[in-house]
Amino acid sequence: MNATNSPTDTVLATIARTASEIHQGLVGRRVTADDENPSGETQFEADLFADELLVDRLSSVDGVAQYASEERAEIVDCGTGHLAVAADPVDGTSNLPSNNTLGTVFGIYDEELPAQGTALVAAGYVLYGPITTMMVAREGTVTEYELAGGERTVVRDDVTIPADPAVYGFGGRVPTWTDAFHEFVRTIETDEALGLEMHYSGAMINDINQVLTDGGIFAYPALEDSPEGKLRLQFEGNPIGYVIETAGGRSSDGNKSLLEVEPTDLHDRVPLHVGNAELIDRLEAALAPDSG
Ligand code: P6P
Image (tube, rainbow, N blue to C red; front, side, top):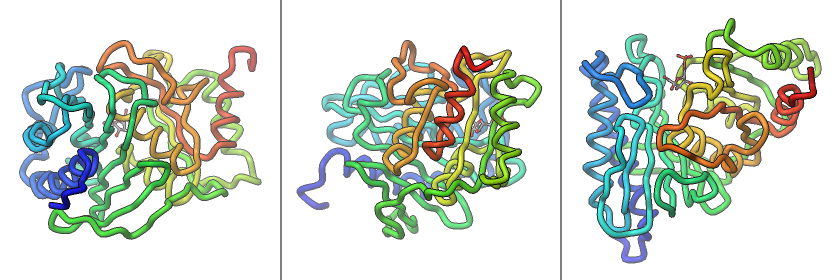
């Protein structure tokens, strides 16, 4: 091992190696377990398997003081150090029965959890697609790797969101969208100059990777019956907001950057909107209280 590896380097290398095991371990684990996660969602065997692998591998990394995940109620104390790793071990497991693409999301904070997104020192995701790739935002730049046998190969460095948006995709049951969000969607769908194509897979990492690659906007907004939306701040909102902002895009909870949202609980949900800056500007204008 390189003697100059920082704890963050080691965490990233550990996640890359573990991701290869998670991917192989999805086989035979596409069924629901008899339990729910702290957000009240049915867990799949894959969620539990991936979470156990991650906590086992990361808790033994020097410098990692805490591990937390969407799948477990409490933070795991891992010993001394200043890093806290928050993960969504398998994001999109509801797509496992249909064998759709899904991913692993991670944020590496240098503060105790729950923490504000500004405390991130690195964040990213692994995408289990036709090829397993890993996107890492760190020190002001985004790098894309291909993963094979637990090793990383850089395939793109300085990844930036394309200036011209091409795709959009929004989660949540459409009848539960707010009137303001419905109006925002109508305006961008009918904007000939934008000419966006609707791409929505139901697995956030798949949708996010499309926005980062082709330009556009992804959102899982506040809903009439769930004002905080569905996605979790610590495990999804902060890491994805950090990646997209590092790549030159913007993130928003509807009125400010996701990274500025103050957490109150480890499993806080947050309305999540990310993508090209001008689309996020239009969204925030549409959701502003006096826009009606
Ligand atoms: P819905 C998957 O369960 C997830 O957490 C995200 O990956 C995805 O964006 C969202 O939930 C999908 O939610 O309500 O459309 O199934």
